[in-house]
Image (tube, helix red, strand yellow):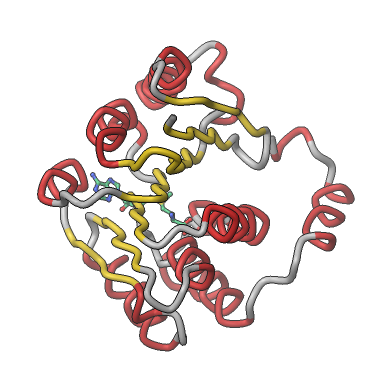
Length: 211
Ligand SMILES: C[S@@+](CC[C@H](N)C(=O)[O-])C[C@H]1O[C@@H](n2cnc3c(N)ncnc32)[C@H](O)[C@@H]1O
């Protein structure tokens, strides 16, 4: 968890992690200047973790819930093979337009399709099985995303849930978001169709592999 690490250790972690591609650095800086809330981006370390997971899994069909300005989507797209595809769901048009501008500038952007709208609706219009699913949108809907998406994850596929420790509050949730994240964590842990591991990277990342 980020807030228990001192700045020297955070710098060390970033320095040992493979460097952030220049376009993603621009995206992060422009997000901060134009849109705000740069803490919503998964950041360079988690971005690289997503890339390595996708490469190890040899994932081709990916789904993301929560595009924001496209930072995690571009990390995912970079790790995909030439015929790989990412569908990313975003409810805010301004975010989708910002992200699309960067997808158009990236050599990997053609692999990404943005679906604008409420992801709880969008998901129900998508049928094909996914190799890799990244959940990083509205926290109160986390248990709903789990229920809707586990059937759409192929056997051996991976679901990655961001903010799974919610700044440490999952042990004693104080709000709807914390309660919902904790509910998803428990759902996954007690679901016999999956295996789980909680990583204390950044704000917590739950890895869920379908058996
Ligand atoms: C934490 S940000 C995503 C950050 C992004 N994954 C990254 O790391 O670069 C969450 C995003 O989910 C979007 N969002 C919230 N509720 C949503 C919903 N019901 N359907 C689709 N997107 C939603 C928000 O507008 C926001 O852009």
